[in-house]
Length: 143
Image (cartoon, rainbow, N blue to C red):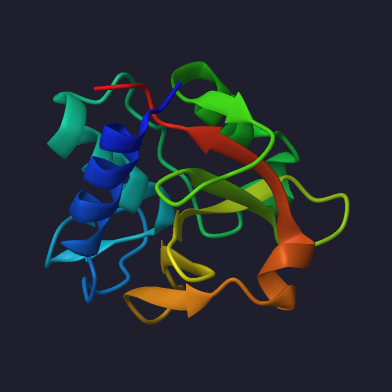
């Protein structure tokens, strides 16, 4: 379970990814990343090697497979929590009854830091659009 020091380190690492262009299935700061790649990159910076290599995936992987691959992977390496705090990971379901397909990091002041499709790693308001889609929260392991 995360502590304040870990959450601060997650936020500091994630801030370094701001402006990184969106690139599907990538995870290279300043070069390109998708939402999972952002989480993978933060993990590498804080903990070293990634605990598992994700399989290749297409942009429509969640719709095609119907499996909760992203949620299940988060549950393997992060700790499920009821009330997220800045520095925790948030999972989103982009359509009702669809598998979780997006992940970001809760930021201070009611914002989320995430890789936004077709744009870059950005800070967005944790507005009702995102609140309605938020279905699970996870804490990074303590450093």
